Length: 133
Image 1: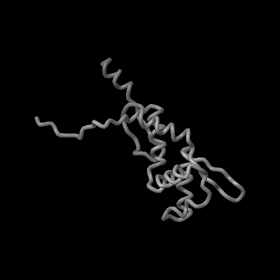
Image 2 (image 1 turned 60 degrees about the vertical axis):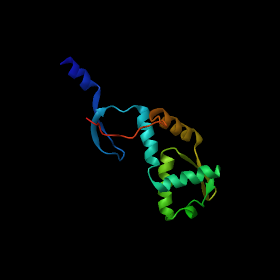
Image 3 (image 1 turned 135 degrees about the horizontal axis):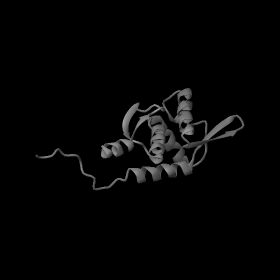
Image 4 (image 1 turned 120 degrees about the vertical axis):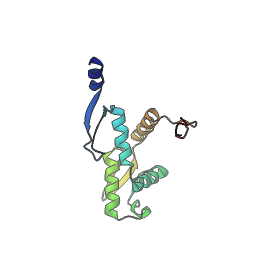
């Protein structure tokens, strides 16, 4: 009975309140796992990946011409920029009537660290094969 109690204490009911898959029963997620998931969700749309690529390639604040680089309406691009800003991946600089966007290097470095720390990849990963038994 004590073993069952100790096992149950290590598990908790977790509610995902930010658009995830809902309720699951499992080990509590670490703060780092939650942080990585939050950042990855912000990058979970191809338009946001493209925006980040544009900003990283320019390595400077970009004002206005992001919309010209995407096959999306200005309002849609604005919503994607908002999601990236909320996640902290980009910074916004208001320059008079212009709104300029640039990457937030410390957050990108944190994303890189979390990804490699929590999901260490190896070049020797094997594909899943059914047991021959």
